[in-house]
Length: 411
Ligand SMILES: *Cc1c(COP(=O)(O)O)cnc(C)c1O
Image (cartoon, rainbow, N blue to C red; front, side, top):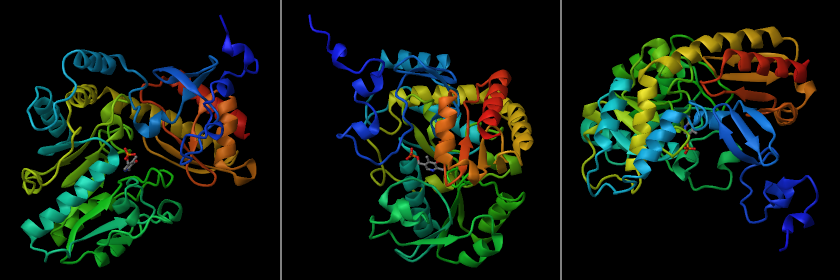
């Protein structure tokens, strides 16, 4: 019997498996992953192919808010896998209605349009707003505009990158979709000036995640709500990353008790198991969609709906929001303590922080590599900013030890 492993360099299962990006000529180079090959995970821990354990402080960009393989979620998925996985929307199935009503109740809005990825939810929100502008507001055909914020991140489709201000995300992908106006984030006067009778919606992230966890001034979200109501256009909040417990509330807009007309959800909605996204909206808005005008083969499939329902069930307990709020104070205290000692500034809300590292200590990438060597996985955003977003299931002890490791790497 041959033992191929004998030919591989001893102790390097990663390269023998041929799995690291640079050594994988068949994989598109649209990512630059850290050199770790993950083989298994549980809760806040991931383990690589050589059995090394790491704390996951990225949590799948908040798709893993409940940790890896939360037992309630894997149980819901297993149960559904053994009953029914896909019907298409040509037929009803027995999981979708309860998922939709649970999500509507959780968010305080009326109707749910299930999709799969975040970008699809954003695309669907744009289509919904345009249709509403023509059918209800009376904007002349093809004249609807949507006002967005600079430094946004809403996904990667051609229409979405059309209103990105990130040149890396845009360059080479034109021609772009018209109909968007870009104003600075956190600037109500600029927003007011950009909104007119053609405006279908204002689309913003309540906290800009990819931009470095940029939190607007208190009152900004309330201002956007009042301004859009006065101007007779929709307020669309992209809570794909900020929502579902991350900031210590169910939604980031809850911090100002603001209810948008349209809410975009994704990432954690799939419990880290399957892609699940949704547009949740007021009834008068969602009702502009009629059969045949929009759809998705996989959107709202039985497996997605079963997992999504279980996610809604976890959030309905309030436990995860509470944990994020309480442990967010621990995170804030730790980062405050590091400010001036390797950290030049940070922004945090709940278990979510953008940490600006002293550039003389290296790029965000370099810091991420050094943290990885110490057993912590994070991801840089821009330049010297790293984002911390552990699963909301993290314990106080583990969070404190992660902060101690950060101190060791930075100081
Ligand atoms: C991740 C993200 C998206 C896109 O989600 P995908 O599932 O990657 O398409 C959209 N908006 C925000 C705010 C996000 O963080």
